[in-house]
Image (tube, rainbow, N blue to C red; front, top):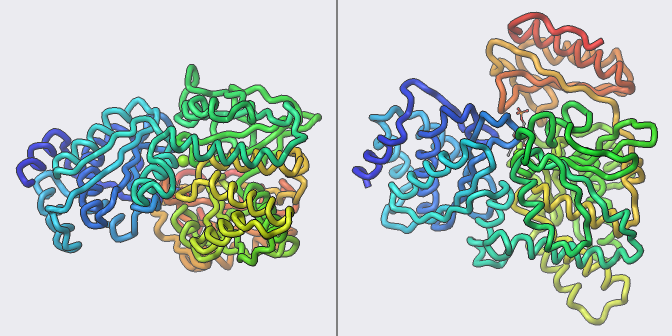
Length: 543
Ligand code: 16G
Ligand code: MG
């Protein structure tokens, strides 16, 4: 393979000296810097496939980043994120200078004792960015340079690609590895679920979707006919005029705490936003006074876990259910889940893989980041119990109904990764079954006002955290400073962490009032600026 790799890599040369790192969300930067990275990730995915003797996925996307950026992520056999050791290999391979590429490749082959005559199979997908077509071709070139087989799924959402990989490696037990198969599985389950919402009016079946001018919009369009009018979607920001993620999408709505541009919002109507690769979703509405209300990942986790807990009780199934959050989870949500709902709550570091991993430890693990990325994981044993109960003819009607609802809930969920389309269908089904309006859902608990800020420092690695990022252990004095600032406000909490995707330190604060949250966030930003080597001007107060 040496000569083929040499020849092909010459067509995807690495700019000398460029260093990039495989971070929480894979490689992500301006698309112009990524051609060699894509080719090399094609090589790495092929090695990973030979090693695992399974199909591996490669997704070309930069999610909620601006259109000019792009990125790439590897998907492991069960649809999960690639392991940390291989993230390390990705970084090594990406940064090897042109003349050292073969040696870098050889190093991985040796360390992992890879049998190069083993067949390899790689699934490739891409988002709608203008750079994605040529970049995904570079991935395919990498696969073929090592003699691997590839299947190009073309335009798909990130969770769709994860789904395909999982279907393929479970011999289609998880579903059929086609986009059609995906729609069929999810929509059938959705339609079965909504049969339990017999008095749902057409009005209640209406949902406004902001597609972030990205792949999610295309895929919602594609899916619509499978929904058999059980859900009426008004799609905005469908990519026909607006720019990807620009003033729209889940990240914009969550961070700005305001509606996206380009949509029509009627008072009291449910709206949701996807992000640029459709692995995040947030809901929102405007009340009769025009006031904006956001229902983020925490509210979604609460709705889903409440629903599941009720069904488990009705079904008489003894399964342990837990909710996994990060430090960004609103304090009110954690209190509600622990004190009122009495479910187990776990907190992990930011990043899907950490939440996913923690959720796998329970019979049913509901995980959501506040930003709207999340899903539900069912253990094999839990799925089997649900299955058996649903097929049991000797149980009463209430238990039977609950068991069937649980079974269809399992099927509507994409367990491989957070999925805006799948989450949307589940949320819509739950609201319909419970006959709940978005206002009633919102009223389950009230969010504590909060604020997120960023601070530029000369080297964000000086900040080290512990306790799932809730406490800083370095630089010296920073945590003490935060602790004493927090004491100045009621119901307050604050933490700082270095971003995994941007060269900044992130600051989070929440408190009893918005003014307090804003002031605390500013106080803490100043402490970071002073103690962690701030650059540029001092952070200015928000008001
Ligand atoms: C990435 C993560 C996301 C996390 C975000 C935090 C994945 C697939 N995505 O987008 O889960 O919330 O990074 O970004 O893991 P930050 O480190 O810049 O705050
Ligand atoms: Mg995304």
